Amino acid sequence: MVGIAFTVMCLIFGTTFLAIKVGVEAGLPPFLSAGTRFMAAGAILFIAMRLSGKVRWSLLWRKEMLLIGTGTTFGTFSTLYWAEQYVSSGIGAILSATGPMMIVLMQSAILRQKTTRITLMGCMISFLGVVLVVLPGLAVQISGLWLAGCMAILLGELCYSGGALYSKRVMDAFRDTNPIALNAAQMFHGGWMLLVLSAFTEPWNSGEWNLLPAMGSLFYLILFGSMIAQTLFYWLMARTNPLFPTTWLYISPPIAVGLGAFLYKEHVSWWMLAGVLLIVLGLMCMNNGIIRLVNRRKVRSVA
Image (cartoon, helix red, strand yellow):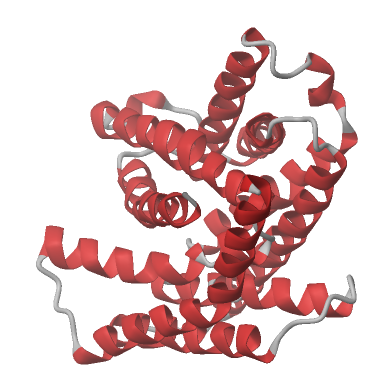
């Protein structure tokens, strides 16, 4: 089940970049799109959990939910959306792939958790694979705003990594609370913060939107990108560790390249294929120990 959930999550997250692009090209303001996506998904999930009696309203007012939402949703997506005005998607993919490495470093430096050499080596191999996948189509025009955009993405990944580590800590403290409810609460908080940011920085003129693709993009991002993929992310984190589910950041560039080749007949080079193989090799190095750990826990629970 862990392998299936991870595969489905990666496939969905890998396609959300295309859905975001469709929405932005249809005229949706970026922060408004992101805020609507997360706030709607969080509200729908939380209300469904409340109606089924699996969560109390008081969970929304816990400071832990606000902090997670600030890091993993608001901090990550506000910086990414702003930066992509000045940084190419290829650079964005490479810089976003630093997230798992940041988690490894933060676990070692802050939490004093030992990291195996094979895990660290796997992180580096997969990161090199991402570079090879993106490199053929990379175009760089260095400027002050370009540098600021790169720094913003790295700051967002720092927020994402810190939020992931803190989320695992909160899950351990809220063992009796369904991970779906925790995910819903943090998305709700991150969503309303993005909407507030949008209200102060973006025009809300629906007359300029191409309504059908804009609403289609939002529907896909709310249902699949947030309600399903984000829930799988938290489900995986509850059963493994903060590093394992975040390795989807390595897989999203090959999926994006594959979509480009399939939908737009874009060229796929041998460098890209070599990069995909390196990503898979790195993931095997990183996650083999996690799968063995999950299997041992399963055997113990059956016994």
